Length: 144
Image (cartoon, rainbow, N blue to C red; front, top):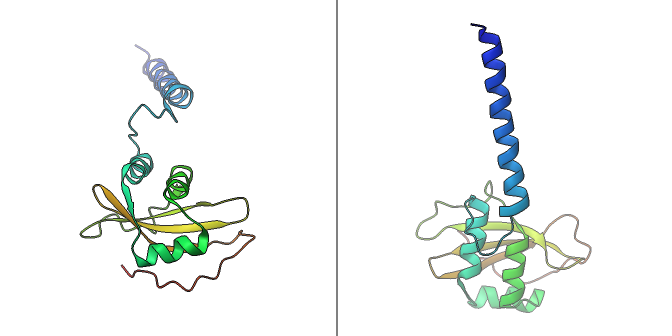
């Protein structure tokens, strides 16, 4: 019995399985709105997207400064990147997620959003490097 031949066949099998699974995910499963997301970033985006935004005084201030609405924030969340390294997913009572993205072609921002079960609140918005139209808002961010 040739052990090298068996090992090589097994490695080819596993490699084909991995490549096939990756292609199935990329071609048929990814970005389908009718399927639940199984990855952490997708589940966070879905949770915030399904929740009702609460416009407290801080969020109203940022909304006036950046001309935001519910639909703009939810579209930003769906297209943005969740930064788990900066987020506080284990914060009590509710986690705060940091999402980077473009509000429009000129403004690259970072939003800090608290995500409860059925509601979410905007804590802070800050401009990121690469933005062409920086905003200077006089809003007091929530500390967490």
